[in-house]
Image (tube, rainbow, N blue to C red):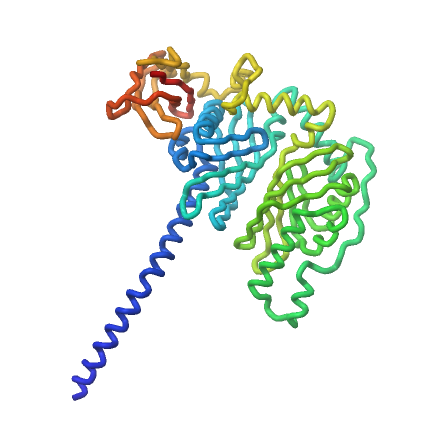
Length: 473
């Protein structure tokens, strides 16, 4: 009797358990899809920032046809122009290497801080920056990207421009940096008294010192992050109590350590630039890291300027106490308004756009990469990739290249404007010397290639170069 009763009970229990299992499947599938999309967007964002000349074609398909890209100097619209921009950038700077440090992803918006090292058109380069990347809803397709960095890090290594950038940095530090032994006679400003409370403390007191809720913490961090970005001549003292004893701040020119030094820095900054104001455009907060894009306008020591920038603020775990913040912007936006420095900035920006901007009508007679061959990477002097001839062409063209003495493993591939591989012409060991290979306008599958712009890339040990050609039918 007991066994029969148990069997009767087991049946409904099993059915009920199965029903719960099936009911949970749609929710789990949706969560799984969201998790996969998050991982994919993180991977794509990281890949776009850490791209190198050797894997450049593989990242082009991540961009939408209407991709929009901005950096301190160039503005790019559309996949064709974006592809040309990237190929020109890495064609002139094949050894650039970027490493991502902090990264966040919220609602399809990826941001990351990074360092880039290498050479830009033969000029040694070592710089820090931050990027913002936006994805189409529920996809890993990127329709917007902006890079924030300062061109001063490149200018500092170019004879003739180095003096201009170092002069401006000395001028800036004399005005704001309390730790700088200024060679100029500029009286420092005294830091006024600061408030003794932190943003959000009143709300905490009203809670009878209970453990702070997640909602309170988020609001407090947002308030503090916004305040640090939108500081002005009146409100800046209110942020000082939110800084930890080991707080550090960085911008393209100064490095500040400790809240007392930060107070002196801000006092000097706003004493010399009382009308500066900043407007936040976009912001994110995740895992105690706040990021925001902004535009700053006003005047610094009487020099008017308006410049975009981006900031990152880091909080202590489960608190609104800030231990790190960094502002990213370009010094060129200020220097461009200073007589005597404006010509240096304009000269560099012309040099840069000639090297990378496919929409720019370059006034220079020689490509920027040829300005100083003595500073080019050694591999660049031993390998070589020539411009195809004829160009434009129909039905065939010839591409010449040089391999250093002793030979090397070399690849020579052709890509369309979307970064898709069209034809592999060389892939393997090639003996040293000069040679040429023809392309008859057909794909690896033997199909005729369509009329349009194509890029060919040659890679070898510690070498990469790319050039553009046009097929007309």
